[in-house]
Image (cartoon, rainbow, N blue to C red; front, side, top):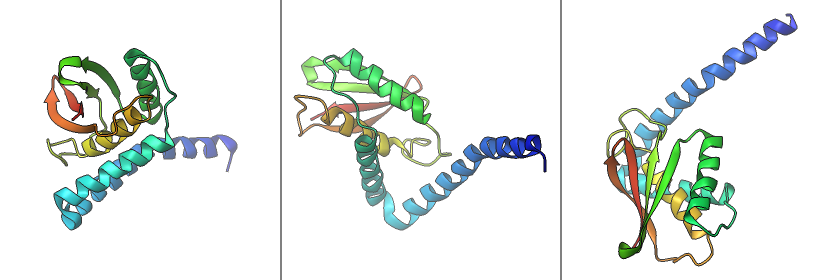
Length: 155
């Protein structure tokens, strides 16, 4: 086998990997929801997000704009879309608008948002890592708006 043939085979394997991961994740989504039920499934996925936040920890920053940049840098590295942050001082919360979330078919609520609870845990972890974070705040999906998954971080 020539070096170019080996390189072509590796390249084909790399291009096939996203398809294989989608199939694996779709199977995992269906099975987890079927065996664990909706509430436990959401709890497990949120915990996965918290673990991701710990493994992909962000540096401490001093502005919402800098935090958004740090989050988007990591999201781009893992191919998980991007986020916009909006402070709502009167409501004492941050609204996160996440675009281009990897879709696992129609799984999840709302449909297509099976990874939403993972994002809840991820964002809750990242925001909780920042100086002065209120540990009583939680991140919860509020729905879709203009093509983005909307998450509210607050009480």
